[in-house]
Amino acid sequence: MASFGERVLRSALLHADTYEEVEHDTGAGRQALAVVVLSGAAVGVGGIANSGPEGIFVQAAVAVIGWWIWAYATYFIGTRLLPTAETSADPGQLLRTIGFSGAPGILRFVMIVPAIAFPAFVVGTLWELVAMVVAVRQALDYTSTLRAVAVCAIGFPLYALPLIASVLFLGPWPV
Image (cartoon, rainbow, N blue to C red):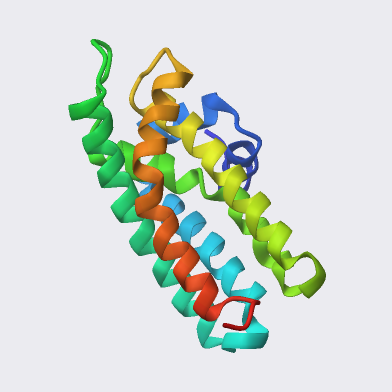
């Protein structure tokens, strides 16, 4: 079994086998939570000039809430609306894999540099979305990446709206 750091790196590099490992490791829930908190805190670090240190905690909390909503929405969408004959998952598997799909977002701490804040936010968020597709494909036992894309496309706004709102109010861009 890979270490936490190896799992984070391999998740960010979109290694499907790491998502499979996390899916089946019922003890990886705390690690998934840690990834989500780190990813959210990275956004807070990027916006520290506008929101101060408390923005780090707020962004981490928003990330945790978004993760929970997204995981359960994805579970419902993937197992009820768009299942395949092979689809087999429980909410814990989605929480773990989706949590690790936040690994690329940890790099958003570079938003602290104003000149690259917006591109860093966009790249980090889109990279997370791609990782989410891999996580969903593995957790829901899909053979089609297109089906995983559809699930993510339906559920992404539930995650993106609170993230964008929190960045607009607490991020590196004055409102």
